[in-house]
Image 1: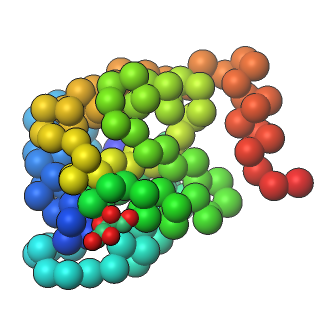
Image 2 (image 1 turned 135 degrees about the horizontal axis):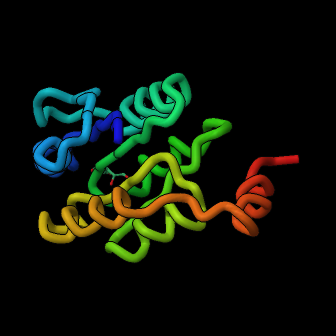
Length: 143
Ligand code: RB5
């Protein structure tokens, strides 16, 4: 899988940990920053990942902030982005298999590294089931 990933200062360490973990598993990961844990604004990084995912068909995004909330709120402003705030393996699996989510969000202040590995495994090992879920996902877009 190919991922674009970014964080703010509150998600910086977990972003770096996630990159290492995914690369170890053989995934391609593009780090869109930040490169230090200096204070930054999460919407700037959420927009960067959302735009990258939209312009690279089949790719996915990962956004990490303190809670994952601000990142998911920002990314979901983009038409075609379905950003899911996940906190365990099950929610990550469901985000892919039922919601066809294309951006995974989580919070460094919410989940520990063990949980992050479990979330990433759930996401990577699942795929969209289609069928009845396709009709529902289409309805997410505003009429
Ligand atoms: C930063 O303090 C924090 O507000 C941010 O990382 C995030 O949790 C926002 O949703």
